[in-house]
Image 1: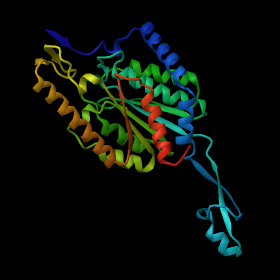
Image 2 (image 1 turned 45 degrees about the vertical axis):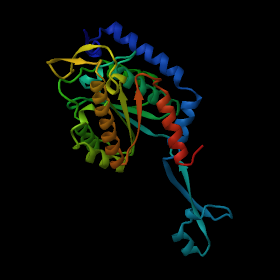
Image 3 (image 1 turned 90 degrees about the horizontal axis):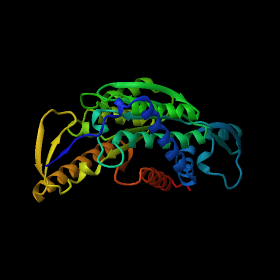
Image 4 (image 1 turned 90 degrees about the vertical axis):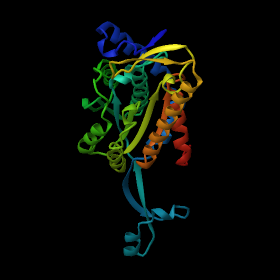
Amino acid sequence: MQRISSKKKTSSLLAPELLARVKKIHIRTHRLVSTALSGGYRSTFRGQGIEFEEVRPYIPGDDVRKIDWNVTARTGEPFVKTYNEERQLTIHLLVDTGLPMDFGSQRWTKREAAAQLAALVAFVAMQHQDRVGLTLFGDEPGLHLGPKKGSQHVLRLVREMLAAPGSLRASDVGAVLRTQERTLHARSLVFLISDFLSTEFDDAWVEPLARLARRHDVIAARIVDPFEEQLPRAGIVRMQGLLESELREVDTSSAAVRDAWAERARKRRERLQASLVRACVDHFEVDLGGDLAEPLVGFFKRRAARHGRR
């Protein structure tokens, strides 16, 4: 009989072990911030923030949609508006540090994967002189770090993500979103990184997400462990939920049990995707059984293609 439980909670790491993990993430993500990832970030997001510069006389070939009709009517000659790309974006990372994020059946826990994903976004943003902030959340909003630049700031973000204590109750996604509604004033690029398990039977978070997405560019990244999607065939397994005290025996050799497990996972994914679509939020998924950077690279490419950028 086997017993499945979480790996050691990262929040209980001693300082030397914590620093070693931060260093490993730094090395790995620094290597992954490649031309493809950096180029995808630039083409996907850098062209979104623009500010008005001036009006000038119309030149044949100019986009007629940029004609300033007020100036044109006043002068009797066609004028067009010109814009400059804003030189700086503000990125805000909302990262789930609830206790279920400390589970992992693969090389990484979900928390470690979330930290690596956030580090990838932060380091590539740093390359483009963009500012990055962080808010951690569990059953209530946690540590908040305002947007800043610099590699030391990014390393602190990673350290705080790994060291934060896990909550003893399910993460409250709605609470952190409502907090962001009140505190995020300037338009920002918001990454919501979570396993979203706490939203399975709760729709109260969808409306605040939709409201936040109307003011900011919000992207959801779901962190998922393969074990949560497909039960391995391993005989009788004793399991204990991270938020439960009761041990349960599960016969994983039963095809019916494995099918029921997979069916629940499928419905959970479909409900989550439907909620994100309803909130008009782009999303992608990071599977701990695969490469952690590829989903982000793929998302950049799909979004750039959808927006007609190269």
